[in-house]
Image (cartoon, rainbow, N blue to C red; front, top):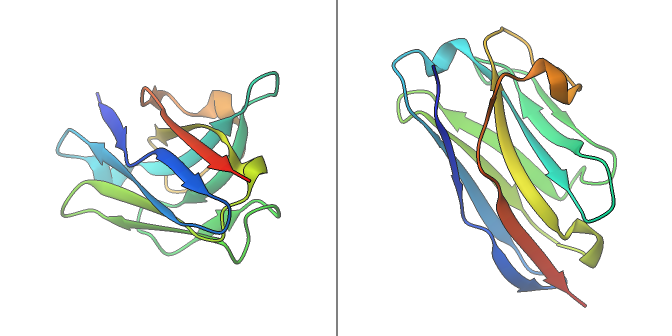
Amino acid sequence: QVLLVESGGGLVQAGGSLRLSCAASGPTFNNFAVGWFRQAPGKERELVTAINRNGGITYYADSVKARFSISRDNKENTVILQMNSLRPEDTAVYYCAAREALFYSVVARDYKYWGQGTQVTVSS
């Protein structure tokens, strides 16, 4: 069982930065690949970025490449999403999700554990 808690969302102007944190409970967090998803009103949930369980392999959606960065600290049971050069279209609820596997998946239903989400709003 893994409990995920996101933090760090908020309101920021376009071009600004935010740092989201996903804190996980449980002693076996290093067995889990992690993804950050987002969902905007009226849109489907989409994978933004993901990282495999040892942090060596990452994925970024085309829309966030070169702007977002994912990292993890398995000793601290934390995954960080650094978001730079934010745009109004990045506005969404951001969710941290975990699956007990070496590699991440791009499919939301492959993740068993989800956080409650944190709102990110980017004003123009």
